[in-house]
Length: 162
Image (cartoon, rainbow, N blue to C red; front, top):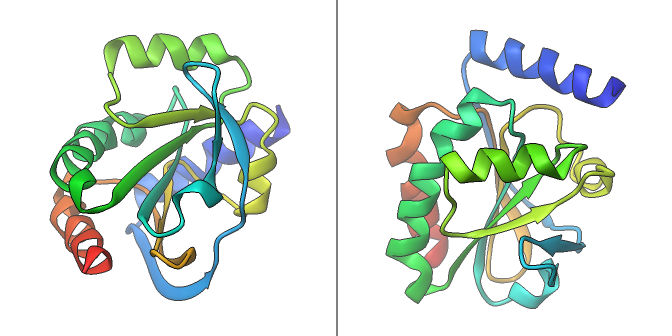
C-alpha cells in the first residue's frame, strides 16, 4: 500500500510539472508476467522488435488518456515490428479488468501486482514508458502522458523502427 501511495503522490506531482523524457541506451531487464489470457509474456521473446513498455494503473487519469495513442501505434506499426506491452501495477486485478472494460486495449496487457517489474525498472510515477530498441536496449524513458505529446512519442517510435 505504501508503494501505491508513493505512486499517487508522484503522479500528482507529474500532473503539475512538465513531462519528463530522457534518451540514452541501457539493457532492458527481462521479465516474465502473465497476460489477460493467462499466458506468460517474456520481454526477451521480443528481441529483434521495438517494444514500447508502458506501466499503468486503473486509478491513473493520464494512463487512460494514453490508451488510444497506444492502440493507434500498435495498429499502425505492428507490421514494422512494434510490440506494445502495458504492465498493470494494481494490487487487485479486478480493478484493471474493470478499467479495461471501459478503456479497451488492442495491445498486450500483463499484470505485476507484486510490483517486481516496477522495481526492476525503477518506476516512480504512472504512467511511465520505456522504448526498447531491436537489440533489447532502453533508448527512451518517458514519464507522464499528455495528448499533445503523442506526435513526439510517435516520432521516437518511428525512428526506433528504422
